[in-house]
Image (cartoon, rainbow, N blue to C red):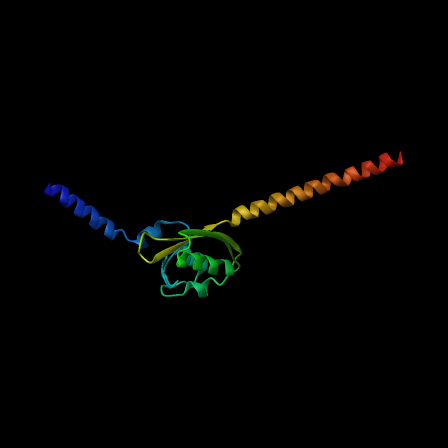
Length: 154
């Protein structure tokens, strides 16, 4: 019985050492942990690389001023929804499109997380496909117009 209690205590100690910062560092996507006042508590290396100028204690409302991000922060902080998603576009230094999800971390922790999924490549591929279809339909219409003109003449 004693060894079972010791094993449980060691496991609990190990879980305490496994903090949110280590888990955030393991995520490849930009991830920001913030508190009830929308102040950054922690950001992983991918978030620093993507957005630059992030620092603990900085206000998310000042960093992400887009209306959709403000609405996302307001809805998560007010507790009206447990988690929410929006599309966000970062213009500088390079235009990037993100799918941003926000949710609370655990129960009664007053911590929340933003996860940014990069959608830039998918959007670029969609634009290429739309351009190809437009060009192909134009190229097909041009000879058909000539042929229909000849047919009408005959």
